[in-house]
Every structure is written in C-alpha cells, then in structure tokens.
Amino acid sequence: MSRVAYVNGSYVPHGEAAVHIEDRGYQFADGVYEVCEVRGSRLVDETRHVDRLERSLKELRIAMPMGRGPLGVVLRETVRRNRVRNGLVYLQVTRGVARRDHAFPKPGTPPALVVTAKSIDFAKNDATAAKGVKVISLPDNRWERVDIKSVGLLPNCLAKQAAREAGAYEAWLVDDEGNVTEGSSTNAWIITKDGVLVTRFADNGILKGITRTTLFDLCKRENIRIEERPFTIAEAQNAKEAFLSSATTIVMPIVEIDGRPVGNGMPGQIATELRSKFHEVAEIK
Image (cartoon, rainbow, N blue to C red):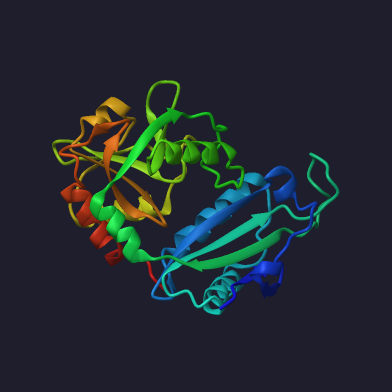
C-alpha cells in the first residue's frame, strides 16, 4: 500500500508530496513540528501535543494553520489513509511560502502544514528496551531556545550521527557547567540509589517533552518522587538506573553511559515498570 501525505489542504501520494522551494521551512528552518504516537489507531496525548504546538507557534509568531478541531480531523484522516495501527503521526507547520527574505513575509501569508504517518514495529522497540541501550555524551552546542520544537535540528542530527557511529543509541548533551540537558531527540532521566527520579527542570535549555509530562502523572500515581534538577554524567554513571523518554521510545532503559555500565548493566526495575504502565495514564483517543 502506498503512503499518503497531507500537504496544504490536499491528501497526495507520499512519493509525489512536495512543498514550494521558497517555503520558509526549507529556506530558514522557520517552522515547528510535533510527533504523536499512534496506538491502536488512536492518538496518544494529542491534547498536550497540540498545546505545545500552539506554544511553539506563538513563541515564533506563526499563526495556527487551522483550528484544533479541524487539525484533529486531518491527523486522524492521515492515520486512517496510511492504515497505521501502531506508529506515529508527524505534523510540521512553517511560516509559509514567500520571496526569500530574512524578515517575516507580509501579513496574511498563510502558514504551511504537512502531515505524514507511518507504522512502527512496537515489538522491536520492546525488544530493544528489554536489553537496554547505550548513550554517549557530547557538548550541547544548540541555540538557547530549544524549548521551542523548531525544525532547526542540525546540531541534533550531528549528535545522533555521532552516537550511531560510536555504537550507541543516543547522545546526551552536556552544557557549559557540566550538566546534562537532554538527548538529541529524547529527555534524560536518572534514578538515584534512594529510588528518586531526577530530570532537568524544564527551562529554555530543554524541550518539555510530552512523554516526560505524562511520566510525571504516572509517578504521582505510583508515589514515586521526582526531583527537577541538573545532574552530571558522573552522577548518571553512578546512578541506580537511567533512561530516556520520547513519544516514539516511551521509556527506554539505559545500561551504559560513555562506556561505563549503569547499575548492574541491565535495564532497571523502575524504568521497566514505568514503560509497562505508561499508557495506563496517557490520554488515548
């Protein structure tokens, strides 16, 4: 079955989908995106994803391309047309098409919207989680507003590639003070020997992950304490457990950081339980 994409008002074959060469997303990375998990043909945490989309657009002074209701229809129709039962739906909004100029285009220029969907083998992800993953650390050289989910991801791509070339799953980024910010496409967590979850506070230095936020709800239900504070690579290496989170990985246990095992070098009990219980508290509709 051929894939289908939504591009600026039309559903088109994925292989024929295109945007104008002067779309500001292509010219300037002048846009934002969201990725929402699809489980059982339903969207996971849609409300929070659209809330964050609206915030990112507001920070960049880009208009919503349509209302929340119609956007939900487009997301679900894209999922349906691609017959995605388990996978993800991706949406991208840019400032639109205009003559190339660094300044914003004239008022009234419509934002551009692209939506795609694809299937993911959740069983493969589960198998990866059962073994745990390795991460490496790299200096964080991104711009200072990574709380905006911008399509300007070149530093993230370079970090992810460095991880792959090192035989690792992810790269944890470290700020000038020696503290972990987040991964190239994930949020970073450790669990202390006292069973306390630690993750960096959600300031402008990290993206406030939707999965991260839902994990806060799950930890509250499970009476697991969370501390939002900085931590170093050394603290992470000496932690009881470590894991990363995102919409596509959910909770992914980490067993090695920069060549050193975390805990006993196996996926930890708390991370594994959080992964198994996540969808009990996530919004699915």
